Image (tube, rainbow, N blue to C red; front, top):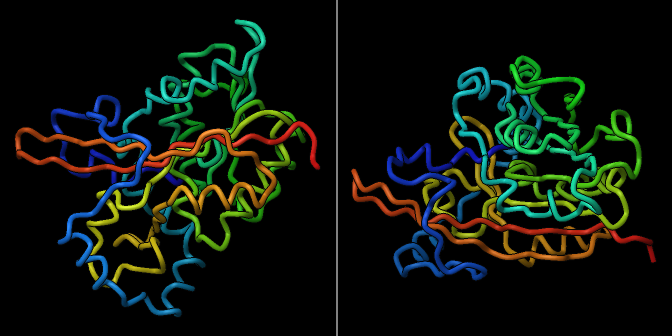
Length: 291
């Protein structure tokens, strides 16, 4: 369900994609221009409490409508996942070891199916908030119950143990998922996936970072809270700082392994447009023993 909606696709990028965008100034927060800083400082009015409650109550409906409108055509397949997250290979004790992964927030399978195609020794659990997205995954020609189990799940309240054995997953991917969830409920997601992750194994995280271009594009009247915004279709997006994410995971018992900004510049030569993208890419480990 929760995928990278304000991706390069939205910007009509013709010469650069999520896979080959030019990377610059990695591992540091983006510095705003004076104009950008002034514009954000002026945007102080929050969406009303009534509307915010309505958005929370209708979150599943809004994502289901998103997939009804866009089917499986909105996002590009994420073939960069294994390249960016070497943990999918490095966590093996021997070359052909079978791995079990969980893709939390799988959408229509843009990350799931490239992983399964590239690595034949992976079994994947995959879940999504949107029932419609789950059905699209099941209808995909690459879907096989021998290699994948997909199910609908609200990660903030539905117990993953109903579908996945405790301490059984080698890797959890949380890619452009947490940003779509209300900040007050994010800890519930981390608590949920903690139960199915093996001790010593990791959550691989990638999501929007503070001052990403998508954040700067929101118009007045879209702000829900600090670094939290609503799109026109009712779906929401949070923009993470290193500090906030670190505290969020550590509070649920995880150990931080990597947590850093990745800055990329997307170039559209046809329109002479250069767009700054900021992501947070991280790895958090479930300790071998709780102390």
